[in-house]
Every structure is written in C-alpha cells, then in structure tokens.
Length: 231
Image (cartoon, rainbow, N blue to C red):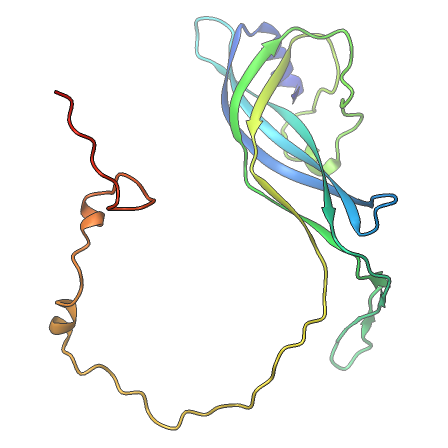
C-alpha cells in the first residue's frame, strides 16, 4: 500500500493497525493477441484501490490512515478473429454527419467487478529491496481521489493489505444474427378481467409461512430433516 504523506507520518509511529474499508477506484485494461494462437487474447487488468485503516499509536484513540493499493491480474481468453474494416457515422439532423474512425470487429475486453472485502492489514518495516511491481507514477485520475500526495517510496514502515475481490473478465464482439420477422398481430377481442371478487381471490393465496419463520437453508427448503435433539 502507498499511503498519503500525512498517513505515512502516522504509520511510522503506529504500533498496530486495524482494517476499516476498501474501495475500488479504477481498472485499467489492456488486450493483446497471443502469438502463434490465433483467436486467443491476453487481458491484463490493473485494479486501483483506496484503502482506509485505523492506526494505533498509543493508548489514545486510533487515527485514520489511507493510501493506494494495486493488483494485477492476467487472463487468456478466446475471442475469435475478424479482419473486417468497419466505418460508421453519427446522424445529425440538418447537419453533416460525424464520421467515426475506422475500427475492426476484434473483441473488446470488459471487466465487471464489485468493491473488494478488506481481509487484513499488516504493519512491517521498510524492505531494503524494491518490489517488482512498484509504481513509477500514478495516473492523475487516481490522485484526485486523495486529499494529500501519495508517497511512492521512502523510509519508514510499510502497510500491506489483503483483499478479497470478485470479478468477471470477458471478451465481447459484434456479430451478425439472423432473426425471424413476423407481421404485426392485432388483438381480435378484448381481454376480460377476472370475475372473482377480491376477497375470494385472496382466499386462494397460500399463507407465507417462510416469511414469518425463515428457513434453515435456501437449497431444498422443506426437504431437510431436523437433527434430533441431544439427550
């Protein structure tokens, strides 16, 4: 984790830390074709997180610290192949249509992700060697999410965060589909309503037992046998 300048001063005096929350800020995606494997692509996703924790510097109340954390994930997916050149325009009434740039029908990477679950944070001394994935610079979009400058390197203690992340990475592309077309069908008669009065209709409803007595399991409700009581 790369703390802010103010948080770094607090971390250097801290004796213990406790996780509070983690927020996903941004995900950078890069797609490249796999050599000698036509139709396969590597999808590199870099996640940027804002980590918030409580630092204990003594007997008093904990102080809030925050910083930036990153995680890299690579997947290899099949997205087929296509070499068609696509040109399109955006219609503007009573004006010249805007011509879009040439593009292909190659797949587009999409990453669906939710905010992570912060599992733990660990306070360690500064390592002598620099990690391989150390950030050289931070995108300006990420810097605006913090109230202070981010410390990329320096002397002092470091804070490591363990996150649980759920994500779906997929490749999408435009394809041609043949759909059957039918004539417009107009209704020939009026739909008659129910002849039952509201009270008679309500009497046919089953009593919602599970709403008043929550089931013990979501799968196979009613099929599970209750274990015997210990004697």
